[in-house]
Length: 557
Image (tube, rainbow, N blue to C red; front, side, top):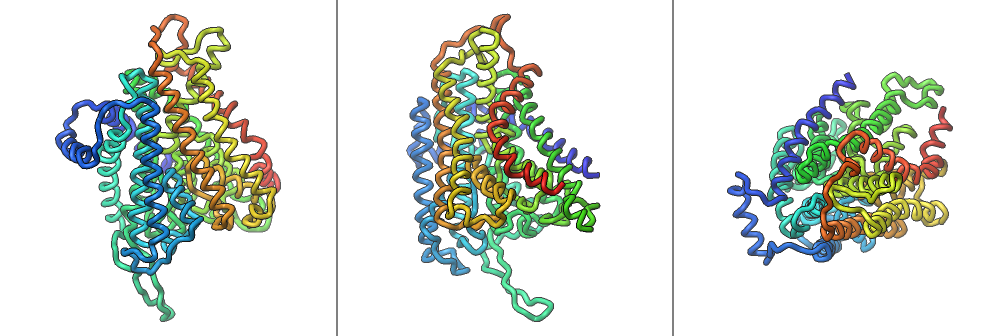
């Protein structure tokens, strides 16, 4: 039954992903479609009001527009968080957020990470939930989608990189807003609250009075998944019955967070006018995802050997930290999807996963290319594809080419920077946290699991995922500043570097395909791509994984 559940969800995903990928290719190629009648006038009105000129940009102009717009959005978010205590839309009387926590929170939602060092229902006013959290939940995935479209145009030899502001607007009007409305209505139909009323007062069976938090939950939950944002209106996230009340909503949320990342490889194939290219990229990411999902499910289904030796039955698997209404199958699938798509929403406590089950979200965030978030994950796997082409070219003594563009020293230097930055910003702060008193003070488990807790926090920040083992006391100056900086580097270094690669490739003269050209749309290249990801990406993190989840697993055998 578990296999059937998981297979049906993934089959529905595939059925939805292919047409969505085709739609995105047309929408961002500025081709005329029937939807222009619906959205065209709205977009032109936005351009007029905002003073946007639809002229093509260079890669430097595009990157500058990304940084300037994001800086402005982050500043607005920080000010609102600092002033939420005196602003309207605060029926619960929530106080202003601490300066360092405001910095961490603003950066977290700005970078599409949504790491929360506060409890959602008690840390933010309704105004902050809507004007900070939901606002950035739309604009940051739209930024990622814009960047991946620019990168795809460069790889596929389009006439230009495009215009960031046009891409940003179209990501909202053509994709995120319509889908968010549909998902919100579906969630409301399943019982997810959507109200601006204050907390509800209820009388318990013992006669005591209880305050039940509520608010504009459904609209936030919809975009948190569609935008691969994560975070949550409530502190326990999608394990809360107001965010995720039924197995049906659980499936809806899985599909919502996985749809756009799964569709983007097909978009790449359509833009490259080579559908096999898109299937190859999708196949590489899909095989990695299935391997991680299998490990997560089998680890949780087999239970905890230490508890079994203590006389506790593990016939139902490791149900610690899981919701009974979801069970092992939907919990394991949700765990694998939320970290593959770098969403960060959780429907079970990752801190209570078995050691190898906990290795799954860690591994997916460390690779950061198993589908990944809206846009950036596809950029990362394409980066590995270029690296695979370069390595293969060196092995056979030919100039590496990818989609008719020569891959030379300049591109490889930039890609090397992107590849090296990710493990650096995960491993270096992890070492500092474990070696210093201020960092180690937040660890609730001083053993091997404590290493996993710290490693998970920084891997989640660097991958812009946002989920956590939640065993850390992380609302401290050390953790707020360190994770805030890691989130910034994890988001913007990759974006800037890959836009520079795009500019470099666009400037090259296309070369015709010959008999000696390495094909990048077949199973041979798929194997090469997977080998590159494993050798370059996975082996980098193997030593620290041996000190954390692997060592913990060996202790309970």
